[in-house]
Amino acid sequence: MTKTASDLSGLALQPRSRRWRDLLREPVASICMLFIVFQLVCIVGALLFPEAFRYLSPQNVSLLQRAIPVIGVVALGVGLLMITGEYDLSVGSVYTLAGYSMAMLYTAGVSPVVALVLTLLIGIVIGIVNGIITVKTGIPSFIATMGSMLLVRGLVRWLSEMGSVSFRPGEAFASLFTGSVFGVEAAFIWFIVLALAAAVFLHRSKIGNHMYLVGGNERTARAVGIATDRVKIVAFALSGMAAAIAGVLSITRVGTATPAQGLGMELRAIAVCVIGGLFLSGGRGTVLGIVVGACILYMVEDVLLLLRAPGFYLDVFVGAILVIAVIANTALARRSAK
Image (cartoon, rainbow, N blue to C red; front, side, top):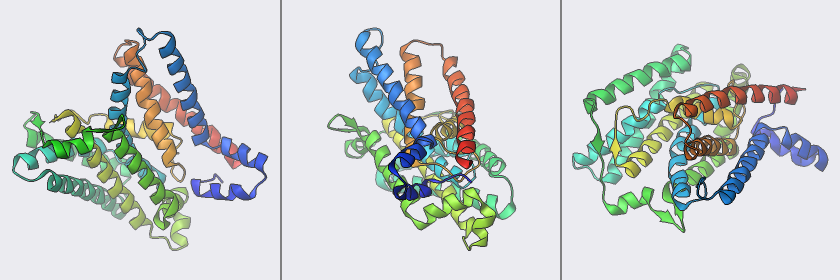
């Protein structure tokens, strides 16, 4: 039987040598080591060829700090849901709808703060509906949320009439998401804060522990008295809210929302989670893995852009890294089960 993140507390009772061996066998340890090696290679390359490879340039560092949070926040919600053994393919559409919601509400005279609250509520409601449909009808979440994805995408196109909308709030509100603190972009700070909140919720709360149990073995979880349906609906609601937050971060930074903005976001979020060590079957994963997965995904794409690689290389990389990560995670699961 594989270990979940909650099982790591038991390592403190083991001999130190064995404890380190068990930690290194966890997927998140391998991902963190890969991230460190990747960073060292990029830093050395940037120092040796500063003009040809501008990885350490202030502009590129700032770009990374603004771009990583968007996919990272979406992946946080998707990851929590994946731990319960379910998927949400509607997050890309909810992400786009959130941008339109902020822009249209603000244009209609609603204050940015109220527009933000209403936008988050929209994401939560869509997530709850997805969860209810999935748990009450028995339809696989992959299919249920695919229908939701198409429905929300159609709604966005109807609202936009295939055009873009602009969002130009006051400087005070915009600075909350586009400013910086000691050189660190506000969006990246929000990402870290949300990741810490997700980690506390997942690893320190009762319902977070229940998510692992439901994803690991739903039948057993139900037998011991866990309200599995409620746990999954909460996870779906968090997924919808995370997509809405990412949409707000994006439109506040860019200032414009378009109907095609969130295309492919759902698959990239799943890729981030798999890269970060989450199992496709559920029941296993950490928030740290999701954060590192988001950083690795976008940093590799950034490197490809800096090297002026053709655009389709980005899609090739995402597909290849997803398959490799699934194979690696499956191998680690088999080793942990021995």
